[in-house]
Image (tube, rainbow, N blue to C red; front, side):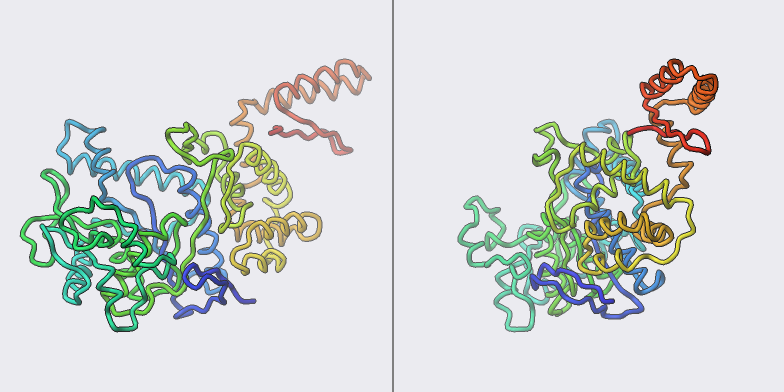
Length: 460
Ligand SMILES: [Zn+2]
C-alpha cells in the first residue's frame, strides 16, 4: 500500500516517496503565542497529527521527524504584553505573555489527542540562523538594505538565470500582475511594491538583536524568515512535507520558498506542500466582530477533546469545514458508541478498510465510515484503527465517568434509584417503576433492561 498526498505546488495527488525513508521530515507552521487558540487553529494541529501518526505507522516511530514552530516574536505579542502588563518592562511582559500562551496552547492540543511534535522550536532561539539566511540573500543579490531594513526582492529572484523556482509558483500568482495590482502607498524604503521585509529596526523597548548585513541599529526578524530558519536548522535545506492552513499559501509560504531556495540554491524547499481548508462556525466565517469566535479552551469545557477531534476529521482536510453544535452532538454519540464497543478490547491490527482511505490523501471521512462498518465484524481491528487515529486514550469507565461528572449526575443516586425500581418491578408496582424511570430520564440518565440486569448511561 502506498501513500498518496495532494501537493499544492504541482496541484496533483502524487505518490509519497520520502527523500530518506529513515528520516521522514515534516514542518508545519505553528501558532503565534499571544492569545487563546481558536478552533480554526486546531484544524492543522489535528490534521497533521493524523499524518504524523500515519507516517510513524508506515516508516516507524524513530524515523519520522515532525517540527512545528512557536512564533514568539511578533507585533501582536508586543501589543498584548503592553496591554496586559502595563507595569512591567516590555521584554518581561512579553516573556509572561508567551509563556502563559504557550502553556495554554500545549494544554489545548494535548487534550485534542495530538502528539507533541519531535521538535518545537521557538523563533527567539533561532535569530542566528535567520541572520545567516539574510546574509546569504544579500550576498546573492536577492535582498538589499534600506533605512535599517533588509528587504527581499521577488523581482531579483525571477530575474536570476538559474534553476530557482519562480516567485508566485506556489500560489499560482504572476509577479507582473502583483506589481500592477500593488497599492500606491508603499513604504518609501522599498524599491518595489512586492518586496517584503526580512529584518526591521526595533522600536525603543521592543525585543531586539544585533542586525545582519552591516546594519548598526539593533532590530528583529520579519515573520516569514523565522520559518525558513527553523525548518533549515531542524530539517535541512530541502525536506519532505511542509504543511499549514490554506490562508498561509500567500504570502507566508510563497515567501518561505523564496527565502530558502535563494539562500541555499535549491529548486524546492519541500517535496510536498499540504494545506488544510478554512473553518466556518454555523455557516459563517469566524470573527471576533460577529461574536462567533470560539476558542479551543471554551469548547473543552463542554466536550472531551476526542469529540472535537472526531468532529474535525469527519470532513476531508482539503475541504472547508462547517463547525456546528449539531455535528458536535453527533460526534459525541459516535464516540460513546465506540468507547462502549472497543475501549476495553485488545487492539489487533488497524483494518485495511480504514488504512486504505487514509493512504489516499488522508481521506478521514471514508476512514470513519469504515470504522462504523467494523463495529459488528472486527472489534479488535476497530480498537487498533481508532488508536491509530488518536482516539481511545481512556478506558470505557473513565469515559463514562467523565460524562457523569460533566452532567452533574451522582452515580450513587442513580444506582439507588435503579435498585428501588428493580424492587418495584419485583412487586409488580409498575406505576412506581415508571415513575422512577421518568425521574432518571429527567436527570439525563437512560436505562436499559436485559436478562443480566439494568445498565445505565448519561444521554447526550
Ligand atoms: Zn511558517
